Length: 337
Image (cartoon, rainbow, N blue to C red; front, side, top):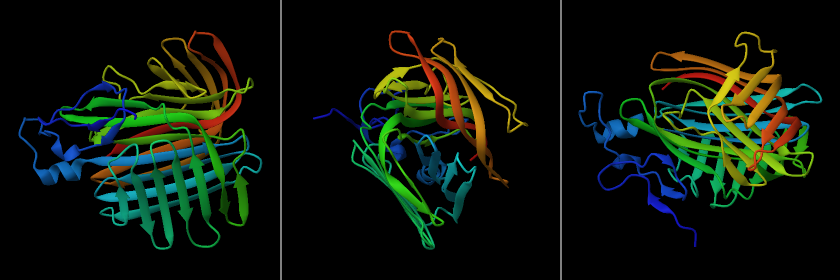
């Protein structure tokens, strides 16, 4: 039986920082000793209200990329999903918002929990059994999405301090086998043997204002090995990083990431490298999903680019592995939450 940490927070309200080698059954965030910047204990209501959660799923095939997220910020919740078709240049997308997170439920169980968002006739649901994740979306018209992500058994689990008294827990994995199909607006896309997925399950008492760049890659290399990549700069970096490379499911920890790009030219290429020399990639954007929200207490300036990676990554032995034409994502994001 796989060893697990039953709860993230101990009996004294403390949290273990760093990379966690074993799964966590439940994020018992209400047991955390959350305090103000003047060290005054926060109330149970404040602990509930300040806790944020989200889950992001992507599926990447040679001809298309699909992304989906459910975000619970307590004052508001959102769900969005999109598909970009490289052959036609078509971007299908839908974004939904619920005040006070109505119709939204994210169980604080990163390995086996259920995530659900409902609004009107649209339902987004993600389930997990600790090995695979099922993704389903149904909605008006012919909208039907059913994906199954497998072999999600070697993620990176990380807990980092956030601000003066907060923290962020994240569980990330990439390069995972994915099957299923997408039916939307009279069109269909199917996963094939070259399709791969990525999963991001995150929660915590996050910094009130934060900004980051992020890269995600999932596919199959020319030599037949599955590859996945997660890189970030600006978040979850208090002496630790969430940067990792997966080769055939094996997780390889990476150093600090550096993103070079032109924020105001959405067609310009990006470069991303790591200070350990293991990653040297260029990214050519083809499409972008953007969203701007400024609602005083909550704000977001979000751009997620869909495109193509070329360059090299290094395996466990430090040997360079060419990456040529694999699909993935880049993100530039400011958030106040």
